[in-house]
Length: 223
Length: 245
Image (cartoon, rainbow over all chains, first blue to last red; front, side):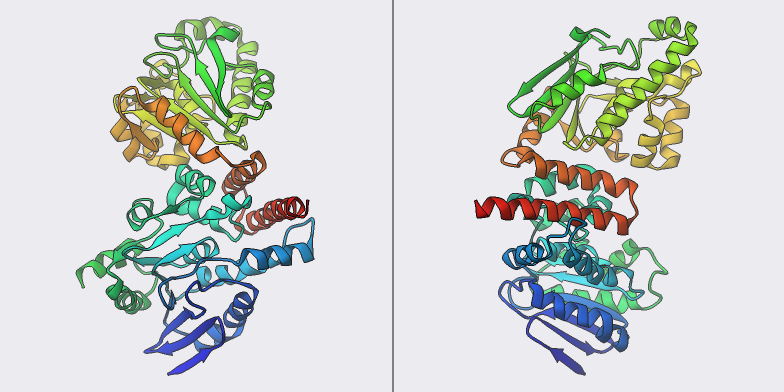
């Protein structure tokens, strides 16, 4: 077992499964230090350690409350580039890394998962959540938009009508609505979340992408 | 089509476009509204648009009798079809949410208008069809393309080539409809939703979100992300400026 823990994220491989955990609880904020660590992990550490599956989760009560707005605004102010923000583009590259991996990436969502945290989760291949989880994209309530791939991912998952509603209202949704709208794949009791994610990781890491996503989820229901 | 047959009203910042030719709300021409009239009206700070029909029906589409007369003038009919396409493309690409409130029948060109909207709410007794094929015609205002996007090719082909009539449940199941309302509740639901998603939101935020949503259909993902970053930064710079003042 190898454990790499900095201030914001820990990376641990056990039984070939890579565990990426946010360790700045309770909020697990995705500030610039968080993204520095994430870039380091996605560019060097994770490709080098060749996990057979990855489980992303938040330590403590929440997955993550998303970007640190003050921090982000400060960086954008420093950049003030007409052509768009380099910070957002490089953050997106880190999210896209997980989406394009050929090993299954599973978001195990407990508690709050809003803003950029949901954007990251939507770039994972599976989203399992625990009862009572809260999801949302509140950016528009601050006069902003989800800028790290949240809109195109939500369009794919939930369709146009729900994307407009969720993004413009900026309200949070509960797990039942998230499941109904195809934003999450399954809901489990809190205590079962990680073990279900581990079962799925083992199941999906064999012949990954040989089956439809829904097939894995069906099997997962039976075990 | 004269002004009385398309009524433009507003409720707060929500615009209401009503097809007013009851009982069927036939569209007498493919270019059912002057595009400049629509633009000028939306330019008055409208944050969302709800399209509905007067009375019991949304619209039964083109009136075949008048289409037959119009087709005799081949060139001008082609112009009208092109203008009709321009109007629906304009609605489709608008940077505010456009919601169709559908009761009763929604056929042909009426269905094409509904498909150009972002969100479709219908009453549970609503009916949908593309009957054009029965007259050796086809939906000429982009309806085939928009339907295919929602339902996939096999279903779209079946509906367009068979002219099948489907009910609200079936339309919901096929992803044509986003929400089913009780009888006589569609308009109220549509206006309530329009208010919910636009109240307290500055127009520039609404525009940015809708622009991003439209981009996700036409740009590849990397281009799309660049555009989103730019939209985000523009809004962030605005926010920073207003914080400083």
